[in-house]
Image (tube, rainbow, N blue to C red):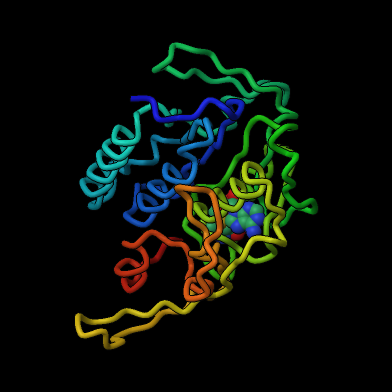
Length: 262
Ligand SMILES: C[S@@+](CC[C@H](N)C(=O)[O-])C[C@H]1O[C@@H](n2cnc3c(N)ncnc32)[C@H](O)[C@@H]1O
């Protein structure tokens, strides 16, 4: 079943897998991206997808299971959104003139003028605008689990020479950056009109509702849970205003596990 809507022109949201190994956290973010882009007619392109695996790591079996889960979720959503490209994005750029790759499932060659590609980068000077959807064809994001203070792991992508656009001054998780871009360009809501929750404090509760742990997302901003991704609207529920829109597994479980993503 093809659940994509044809009313929007075909665009490409490109996620360069920078971390080696498909971590649980990244998997949740990629699930979210499938959800957020479902009705946009956009393709979700993973470059450097060979990094979904790490054959030198003891965790590789977990990464492979996560990859399988990503494929299953994709199939559930129609199986028509993801394009996987094994190499880093630089390999698909021809002389800074074109970005070219194959959509193998469709047996189609995609060729995008290089000047029609934007990299989302918090260090850019210009802010992403609603009209950028009409003016550009592809939007690149670092598939990077963030760190605070940010280590600028987006730099390698910036060095490719893309046109740059920023969102908020403060860092977002990659799925949040995809969502904010979707809201700006598809829902035509300006950045300053999107309700964000800055550095939210997330509480873990036991079965009796007692707070057992809490964790502050220092240095990160999230779209408020007032946004309803299925219907592309903000609901007027004040109780949701300060709730961040996050994958439930991240919010309830992964946030309370110690990771080192460096
Ligand atoms: C978690 S961020 C990675 C940040 C990483 N710590 C760094 O400093 O590069 C993942 C990606 O989301 C996008 N992103 C996150 N926050 C952004 C912002 N405020 N403006 C534009 N893009 C952003 C960028 O494409 C970035 O590579």
